[in-house]
Length: 103
Image (tube, rainbow, N blue to C red):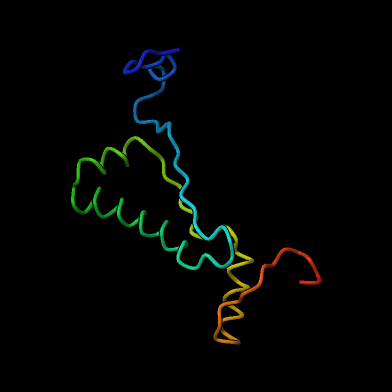
């Protein structure tokens, strides 16, 4: 166990420049979470804009030290169901797709 503020032996042995942390940012886990797919895209653009375009030191450190993975839509089947229903009915589907043929 390490004391706060100290580095472990493993951390010292990693080659310089190797990113050790990975942050997964997801959206649209459930079909009707329509706006949640925009959040990962917004965060991705904010990181790029602040860290690269604006040279913001805080964001540059984040980009240098961590790996970011963005998945805007996890539930692609649910998103497709909502989209097809919207295109045909002009309404947001008010039903859960849970595999039950009686629903």
